[in-house]
Amino acid sequence: MSAGSGTISSFASRLRYDSGYAERCLRALDEALDSAKAYGAWRAFDPGQSRGVFSRLAALPALTKADLRAHGPQGFVPGGRDLDAGLAAREIELVETSGSTGDRVVNVWYQPWWDSSEAASWRLNSHARAAGVGDHSEAILTSPWCTGFPCEDEYLAVHQRTLGRFLYLSERSDPSTWSGELMDRMVAELDAFKPVILEANPSFLATLSRHVVKRALRVHSPAVIILTYENPSVLHQRQIRRAFDSPVASSYGATETAYVFMECEAGRLHQVTESCHVDFLPFAPEHGGPDVGRILVTTFDNPWRSLVRFDVGDVVRLNGPAPCPCGRDEGLTLASVEGRSIGITLTPEGRAVTQGAVDRVLGAVEGLVEYQILQTDPEAFHLLFVADDAASIAVAGAARKALRELYGTAAVIATERVEAILPDPPGKYKLAKMYEPVDLDALLDERYAPKRK
Ligand SMILES: [Zn+2]
Image 1 (cartoon, rainbow, N blue to C red):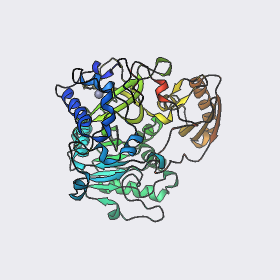
Image 2 (spheres, helix red, strand yellow):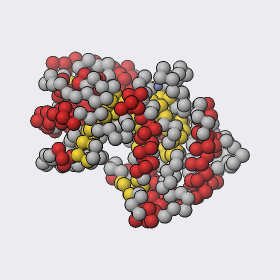
Image 3 (cartoon, helix red, strand yellow):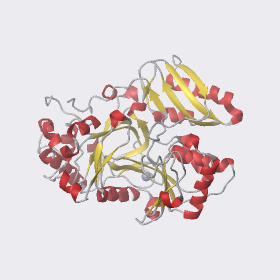
Image 4 (cartoon, helix red, strand yellow):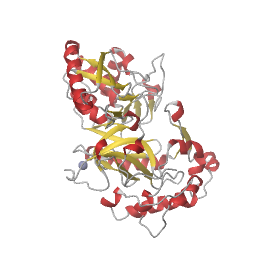
């Protein structure tokens, strides 16, 4: 490993933060480098205390899930704390993320840190801020394998899916197999439980919403609906808004990082500056930069885990120079989370296309209910789609036209109508899949690219 040479630019130095923010960054960085074993080799990259904290962060590598696995939970514990003692005292637990097998990470879970990050995120949306008082009733509609009580062969009674003030609406992880009776039960439980907040996978809630609209049902509208766990499609958001009168906000985070961005009432996503720092690494102009890029997250004030420049594996799009109408102006403001890095596809000429870009063009196709785009080689694309009954041929034609405009005339686009788009285990819907992962480092504007380890 070598420290390399040359200065790397920091996007963060252009942004406005509150007066204590740089101090929080500095504390997080110094604590990690000084006391968490996993960062031992990183000290060689640190240009030192004479430089500003954003420049120091920019000079460091990205932290990957492979690093988390290689060093294990103890490698990231700062301040000389002992993981076994914390576990024995039940102050913390170990939680394995339920990704694909090669992707699994054991995380140290410290509930007070998670709760304070969640509370900070809710202050960034006026509806959530008004509703979320900390002891509100909350219904959750997500894969029960992510949170809740999974049961794929029988149905569980409502008391078996209730935990304190939380009601888990589904024990089943695949919405394409939900029966009408099961969705009627969800509607009845929402009406009876009257949750203040409904937190949901957008694809799961969209399935329920289509059922509500198709059967012309009325359903209790919570004070706010928070979409999380997966990147929402504009199609899903539209279907949810047809069934519920509630304001809808997207919350973005990860098990490793807690809450990172929250959508405000004006529809932009604001960085949760109380609980994390975000380094934005713009793509080169030919790949959508400088407004599109990847993000690396540094967490604040978790006594049991120091994460510095953690690659969450997602791509975002900045809001641009105009301030958000809500008036919040601290840290990064996004127009959208553009989706997973592994969901990036390429035009036949090799230009990056984010899931968000695909979603915006397909979101305008009349009669399209759901879709998944698969890139199968450099020129070939296969679109699986679900359409309203009468509209199948017109939807296929309009979708092909929209995708050709996006990917260019050299793209070969096949369409296939299906009954449903199945979620991947453990219950996450994917908008796009690529035949081989794109090298994200090759997409970056090199002035911001992190050092290779
Ligand atoms: Zn805003």
